[in-house]
Amino acid sequence: MQLAAIAKLAGALAALSLALAPHTASAQDKTKIKVGISVGNAESTFEVVKKVAAREGLEIQTVVFSDYLQPNAALAAGDLDANAFQHVPYLDSQIKARGYKIVPVGLTITAPLGIYSKKYKSVDQLPNGATIGIQNDPSNGNRALLLLQKAGLIKLKPGAGENGVNATPLDVADNPKKLKLVELDAAQLPRSLDDLAAASINNDYAFKAGLSLQKDTIAVEDPRGRYANVIATRAEDKDKPWVRKLVQAYQSEEVRKFIESEFKGSLVPAF
Image 1 (cartoon, rainbow, N blue to C red):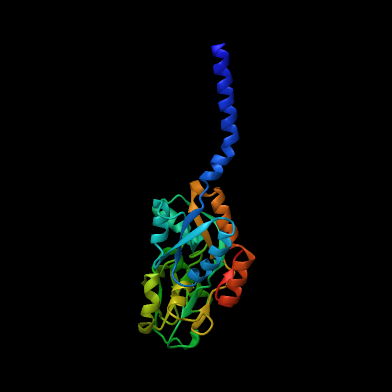
Image 2 (image 1 turned 90 degrees about the vertical axis):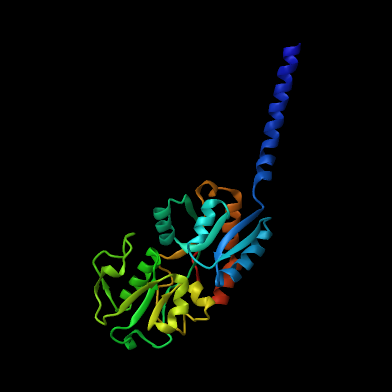
């Protein structure tokens, strides 16, 4: 009788455990997350994302960064749950350099790169020997060189800048105007523009500096190229329910309409 009672009790506990399992898992789903973003247009966009996510029971706290190195380091360290500031080529370069176990989980926007100038209105006006600032990180520096090539200012060696191979100024094969390419931190480029003939500037830093993609550029990247930005999480979290809610909130029609009306082509929804 005692053994039968124990068996009966064990069966009851097992049944109770099975009954509670879904509720326990649900209770463990995150309802509050921290997302790292860049200064500038991402701040206003995420105000809309927050409202959409809140309706699905997900509270988002944004952490704003002024450079491109910290958001991935903070995510890998567990100080963030996700970030939304980078394109896949940049993420790939960071994974290769630092060994991060970070993966993209959803598309956000494309922020076309521009060559900005306060002194000249077209690439044809750039004088011989002009100094051009470009980003010093591998992926954005590569991006800048490809844009300069597209504008007809330089020509890269065959294969440079393509198929995941980042080009550097050493890969410039033809430079008819003898342009001087100066590599600077991406965040410094807007502040250095007064001292340069022109500079390749990422959209978020240009936005913060009051520069207009439509008015202040002499060359602009294809807005629907390979540099679409993404939401990224640690690999271990990619299938979590809160990740799905975050991505769905960003890719909502409400956010799409905000991006299109607010930024008028300087940012393009990539989803």
